[in-house]
Image 1 (tube, rainbow, N blue to C red):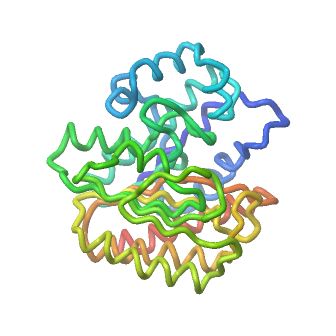
Image 2 (spheres, rainbow, N blue to C red; image 1 turned 90 degrees about the vertical axis):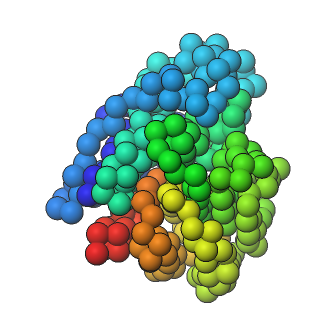
Length: 296
């Protein structure tokens, strides 16, 4: 199956920056040895692609490096042309995966899941919302009228929820930490807020409550934001999931998608474990499980 990566573009971050950019290369290297995957470097998304989901003034200010200091601080990255190219390639990876999923049934981006980006601003290491951009592309290019976003990152998908507030054609599920970023939550179609130190059993019970409601809605296309930051070892997560718990989570999503038969795109989302190799291994587990289930 086809996967798309963007680590051929550097992020231009200083060495002391807290964002674990190295995980993208580590993940690609882990999956390159799996013969089930064909990996492609993603092309940069066009400005026109971005404008389907974002405010033109915000888009152009970021591309030109003229965002005000407060807006830049909310994103959390120092601006550079390298960051622009990487951001556009990240959105391009999800767009390419979306087109591949329409052909093949599923695909993935080894990037993306940038769910804190709002219509007119960025936040929390997210500049543009790649899932919203891909949804806008789907609506322009296909007859898909019901699209679901299953967001299982430990941080609420607030930007995605805000962009699609009141949109009857989009179903957003977010299962996240109650006491974690963002501290002002938006309203998804279904939100489940978990207490600190939620374990595998509690997490999976919440997922078993919510996930059937998503697929009972009969979406024509599904995006899975598969952040691995619920892992106990994650430095920003506050939950207590094990690697086995994450595997059980992923299997439930893939089994439901297979039963429905709708195309699925897997995006990365967050992961900040120490050491970062543990995060890369958790991400790799997700894509390998997708290959086990979606290609069956």
